[in-house]
Image 1 (cartoon, rainbow, N blue to C red):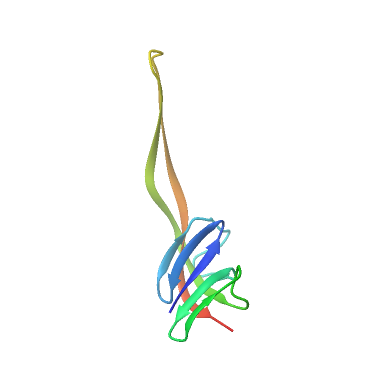
Image 2 (image 1 turned 90 degrees about the horizontal axis):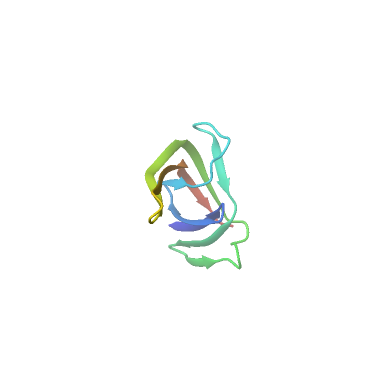
Length: 105
């Protein structure tokens, strides 16, 4: 059984027992419960439920496992013949969420 959820403008495919990196940072601590109510699709043994735009009453429950940093991404600004270069680095922060249950009505 899996579901597709929307959180912070991004869509994620989740299944029970999986860990997912959610791009939106939250004011939570390790072990705090998280609930995603914007479930777009639920697929399982009973078939596929597709929401318009969300499946009514469906929820995905999980637990926060901590904050993680992603890979370092570099951006280079360069102006030719001007002796001007600038290298800027960035690391995105993610929240790791362990999915506990997918509930459908």
